[in-house]
Length: 411
Image 1 (tube, rainbow, N blue to C red):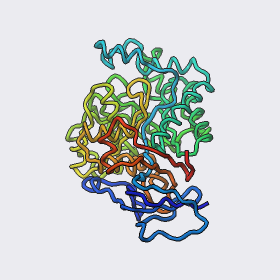
Image 2: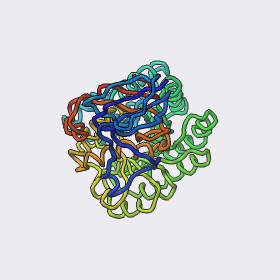
Image 3: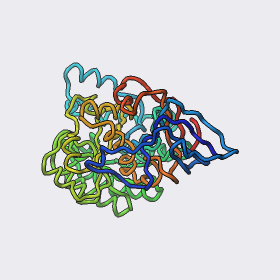
Image 4: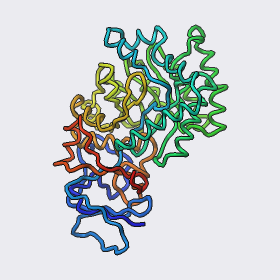
């Protein structure tokens, strides 16, 4: 079936060639077509252009987009949406003066979520997670990465990854799975950290690999969590099973984790709230994508990733939500794009590029999603009538999305 979207006020992120990412000054260039058409067939984009050149296809279904814009779907490359329950009490505790680290030290944080997940059935976790996934799709996300890491036992980590597998089977957007057994040390291993790392390497990883449950491996490399040496040991083990590294780094401190990620050809280094000149230099001439998570900074009241320093050094940057129960209980990429503009001084063009084509790169999905390009998946959203694409981040508290399409199907 062929569908033609006509009279599009502006077609956003149009790429004739299938590029993998944009960097530096290129991030401020957002190619668009005004008064445009878009043709999709089944689940693919097959044509687009100016209305003056719209083809005549008698058997096509037409959708009139007068006054409305079409964006490629958001590509959210960093989420933890498979979890049980919530942590709103910790939210209140932070308001009352406790820090993220203090909450973690008294059994809250990741360990709190791990306890809840271990006590919750796989089916219940799936139902909760599917509800969250439906929500982010309705908000324009058309590709997502989901991490484990709230299990912290062999059984519970595998349970999380099985839920992600089931989500892949039941939803049509591209979903990438990441094994994050190295998210925190369980209480029983606090005085014997190497024993937990042995558990990850010798018991978790072989089962994850044998059941083909993940594409990536991740580590929370941070003061009070996993050291650089520990992170590299886990990453090396994962690479032996064909898992590509991604790594949580520089959220609170710069301890060399970013350099370890680049050294091990990590697909992305994520968080980056604390960046030194050395960290930025290390990223130059690498294939590693820096990923900022501005809604995490917003929620925890911690520094924002220094986007201007990164982009002005001719590096790329991606944006993602970090959707999780403790530090970012939101998967709204529209808010992420707006916050990047408001708090990180990114232009609307830079933010949209970071949330689409560069986000796709951070999931190895550049050939499938992230731009309006012939042959790519027909994953996009149609806005309500808005004056410009800059209105999307400007109107940060308003949902400007009218209709979402995934694989060419209206959701």
